[in-house]
Length: 141
Image (tube, rainbow, N blue to C red; front, side, top):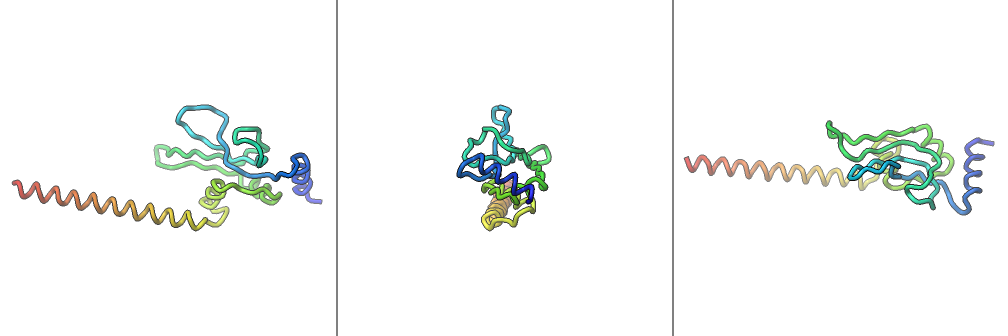
């Protein structure tokens, strides 16, 4: 019998009617205006900040000085928990898709395209305003 099956059946028997969910949970430290998340394997009925089974990674949503959002995963343990029947939540599935573990959700692609076109439009409008300002300055001289 597979160790994964033994462990998952043990967890499911201990928790009646539930299943293990991989979900995004806030870290235990309390800092004002500084979000930081742990990616954990936890029971689906437990609150976000309650005890979890295992930490599988972390996510820092605030960009650092290089404008990067940091994410770390333990892919071996994530594979193990998904093999045991765990279900990732939508935020975790999105992060795993961006990391290449899952296929990208179509909404992620369309959202990126929409933001790209909005950025291009704002650059175009700023460029036309600057050219108009330069034209007015030349006309005044």
